[in-house]
Image (cartoon, rainbow, N blue to C red):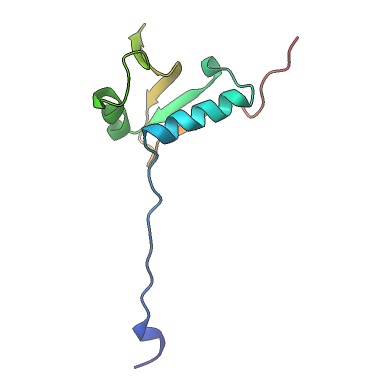
Length: 96
């Protein structure tokens, strides 16, 4: 038996963001000067469902108006991506 045969390699999958992670990403982008109206939250179907049903999400944090879902003021789109993510412009627009 070789020395390599006795070793095992543990591979961990990346952790999907939770609600607190999404809030934090939105807050971080906002502190960088990006308006929440310019952000787009890509959610997996699972994460969208979790946000809709979670007791940790206040009724003031989620809205459904004009055929759009918003989470803490950021427009939500459901995507087939492997993980949810926040899309925000690279830089805040310069003040005119």
